[in-house]
Length: 398
Image (cartoon, rainbow, N blue to C red; front, side, top):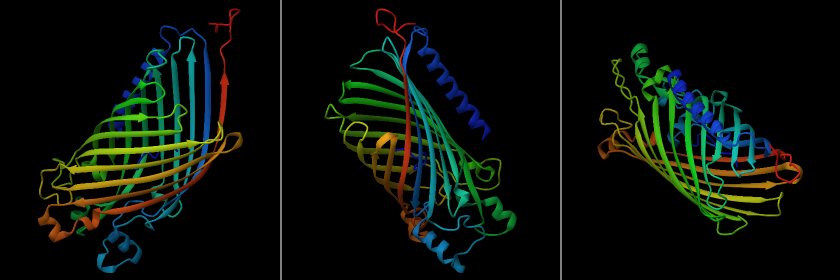
C-alpha cells in the first residue's frame, strides 16, 4: 500500500531542501566512486494508481464541533468558525511513483525512487493538497548475507489546510470574541535510514533519524515548528518465502514550536510537545509469483505530552493526549501489471487536562475525536530491465 504523508516558509524550505539535496548528491557520487565505469544490470518500474477514499471526519473535529457544523446552532455560532461545508467527504487520490535500481558486478546496489500524490476533495476543495517524495538508497558494502544499506529521503507538502483556529489579533481588531482564521502550513521532512540484516532472509534492524519542519501561514507564526525524531524497529520473517512478516517499531519526536511571540501584545498558543509512538504490523502474503495477494494489519499507539509552562494557555498547559490508530489493507495483483487495493483505518484521540480546568471548561469536548477512512483503488505497474553487456569470458564488460 501507498503511505499517507499526514496520518500524522522560505527559511525552512531553504534549510531542509539544501540539506536533502546535499545528502542525495553525496550518495550518488559515492555510489560511482571506485567502480564508476563498471557496467550494471538495471531495473525500473513505474506505478500509476487511482483511489477513492471516504473520510467521515476530514479535519478531525470533535463530536460537539460536528454537531455545530451539521446543525448550524445559532447559540454556538461565531464568525468564520468553519471553512468546510461538511465534516465528511469523498477524496479522489491520484498517485505516481517511479523507481530504478542497478547492481554492478561487485554487488553494490543503488536505488532511486520518486513519487507524488494528489488529493482532491469532492465537497471541500479547500482541503485539496499534494505531496512529493524523493529517496535514494545505497548498499554500503557488497556482503550478501549481512548487508548494510543507507537511505536518505526528502518529502514536501507545499500547502495543507488544517482547520480554522482562533486568532487573537483578529479578535482584538474586529472586537469579535472567538474570531477564526484559516490555518495552513508547508511541511518538509528529511530522513536518514540505516538497515542492517541480522539473520539473512529472516531478521533485520531498521534505524532512522530525521527532522520534520512546518511553516504556518502568517496568522499563526507561533505554530511554526521543528521536530527532530528517532526511530528504531525490527522486521522478522519466519519463513524463507516471506509469506509472513512482522514489524515492531518505536519512535520518539520532540516538537518545538515558536510559542508566544515576543513581538506581539497577544499571548499566543504554544503547541510544543513530546511524542512517543509504538507500532506493530503483521503482513501475510500468498499466491503465485506475479499474482500475489497480501493482507496487512497495523496498530499504533501514541502518547503526546504538551510542554508549555504557561497556565494561561488553557488548551495546552498540562495536556496529555492518547492517540491510537488501527488499520487493515488488502492488495491483490491481477494479470499484466494490474492490481487493486482496499483499506480501512480508524483513528482516535482522547485528551486529559488538569482537573481544575476540565471541571470548568470541558476542553476535551473540543480535542477528542474519532475518524474512519475507507479506501478502494486500482493501479498499473510498468516494468523494465536492461542487462550489462558481457565480454568473451562471460563477465559483464566495462
